[in-house]
Length: 354
Ligand SMILES: *Cc1c(COP(=O)(O)O)cnc(C)c1O
Image (cartoon, rainbow, N blue to C red; front, side, top):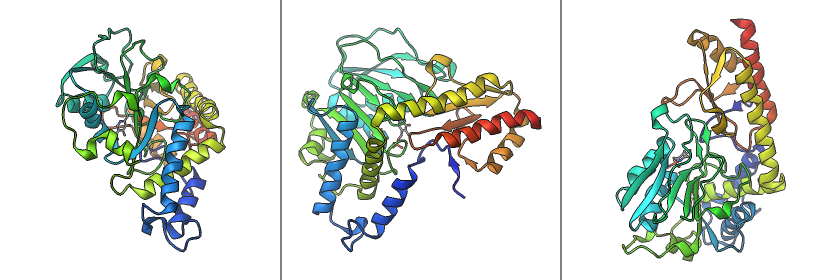
């Protein structure tokens, strides 16, 4: 039986996407060849790559606004340094909202002065710092819009003229914001878009070419733009499957309708957390993520029975990250409300079992 997959990443994808991707492994476009044995320069694959990049810009409402979409490798982790390599000349500002921001800060320091504008480390990153000053001379401001591990999410963007760079790995395509407020967005595919192996980068082309250093070709955004994400062999399966997920999202009404569904799903779990005396939420209420819901049992003695109930209900992947403990329900775009209802039922049912 198919499980209710609450994994934080790699994570749930639409069932129809997984089926179509499986078929393409056997035979792509009735060509008699597998997706993974055709040339990336073939017409079939070039069309797939073009579709993936154009759907990305279309869904984000960034068409004809000077942005380019790229499908690269190296994960979001390579973007921690690639952004700085390409954009950090003097100093950059970082908001430290968790483990991923901390790693981004570490890498950026190799390239210039890095100012940690604010941090929520004092409370194990359970909130988003607000009201910090942003020096207008910064090359850019780096944000992690959704903190996958801690379950917090930035709701209001800081007001600034400084270019904003965002790690949106775990909330890209999940909610409607004005994406043109960002000069560069990156996201590893494996949270809300596709299998691991590719990273979407959406970059405003005019911000490039302003640093003095030499940039190795593989790390140079301009090279990848000029080669249309085909500077070297792209991760064909990951790009193809991401393209299918983007197509699925468009066919299902795009970001605005998925956002409504995501809000409903997150409301269901948070309401249960707040009304059920056995549980407590981890993240500050106003900063709660609609993608990763973190919560704890108030009494750890209930853990064994709750874990068993989850297993019996076919619930998978709800264990919290080791740095937070407790539970984390990741409810990405592909997760149905019915699966969320099952988790909520189990949480309710726990009251009858303890
Ligand atoms: C998962 C994740 C990363 C790391 O992604 P990789 O593709 O494994 O390098 C970075 N940032 C955020 C917000 C994430 O959720």
